[in-house]
Image 1 (cartoon, rainbow, N blue to C red):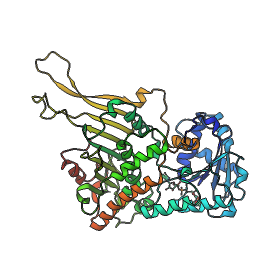
Image 2: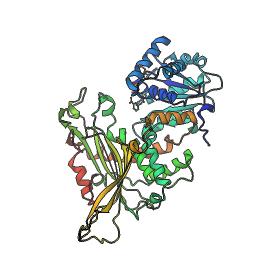
Image 3: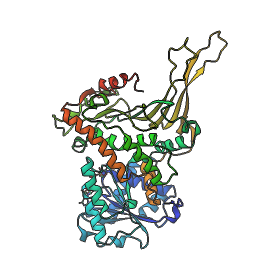
Image 4: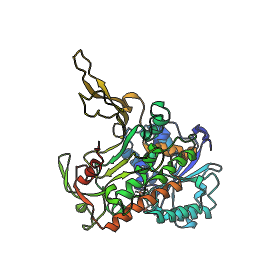
Length: 489
Ligand code: NDP
């Protein structure tokens, strides 16, 4: 479906369920403010905050302003703030009680597109859908935005998706993976398909291997209860890393329509070679952080965090060797790594190219250092290419040196503000563009693949390998890639 990118024709009622929850306060309300500031909200667009607590309109506005003061990085602009607050109304109800929704329509503008954001536990997505349906609030153009996690495994994700599908068609459902809203992740598609330099060199003839790292410096930040039921595999790999991997590996889509892109991504997910009990040792490493030092300070281990079950076998680190069994990527491993309490917060993709077929510089290098394309997702967003250069000079023997062509976003696009991922995603869903949202078959395919690994870990009954906080994970992760004659970046 063609997307009309003129925001002035897209007025909508943005209905935010769970309006003063953590996600809404930290990300969603600030993102809507930024869109308003940038002039990207239609003058008739309104925001209806829905939650359980009884609260006056003024108390709600005060709470929103507090959230903006806390979570918007720049100082608030008085004119924008007053325009933004004037869009907001508060509606209180239990999300599972259909009778409580009876007056909600009085907060909506007739004829406006209703965009519902479920910033709530997934267990009540179906209940909210039912309440909306029973109150005749779902029209063909109504949309619903769902937060991760969509389930804990394939079976539970199907239950949630089925519940939502009772009330909404797939073209009304926007499943969030906030990595898809990051500028650098979107740039990956541009880099690949708008540059013949890369487009023609993106396969097993030229590429040796790919690494995708998403390292977090933080531990579990008081979310022990949630995290321990999930682990790094479900929390990071099943969604963010597999989404990034599918964008790196997909074939060119026929165009940039949502389904054309998602068709290609799902083909990659279907081509992932299964990791199961027969090959789990060679292809995966699970770790859990122990007490260690970060930035010179002692930090507790996972089992010493507040509220911890001291027997927990939950992983806080995963490294995988992933093979994609298709024509383009046969023989090119993708190494994925994600962990908590790493030395720095750092997410990047490194594409390492094969060496030239013949080494003319044998006297200098037994093996030439490879070309590498590094896409820094965060921080210091940008793209970097490592190349070999001759060191200038009249010396009798040639000297070479690796150097970097560095395209830092902040240096190259000096006045451009890098928007938060949620700003992009909220804008796209108000515009009715699903290309940055995850389709049901992608979620299910990703779960199928991850479930097999989790099952193999459970079957092996081996506890995760300990690594000190502030390190890059268990040594087994280094051993896994070294065995292939390669090294983590
Ligand atoms: P919170 O628990 O902070 O907020 C959930 C909100 O939903 C609360 O306002 C709560 O109201 C409301 N709520 C829950 N049940 C009902 C009900 N029956 N009736 C009315 N209101 C209800 O959760 P988060 O904001 O942290 O997370 C929301 C969703 O986003 C979850 O699916 C989470 O997994 C996902 N998510 C969150 C992230 C984050 O950074 N926080 C990151 C990625 C995903 P009350 O306060 O009255 O209980």
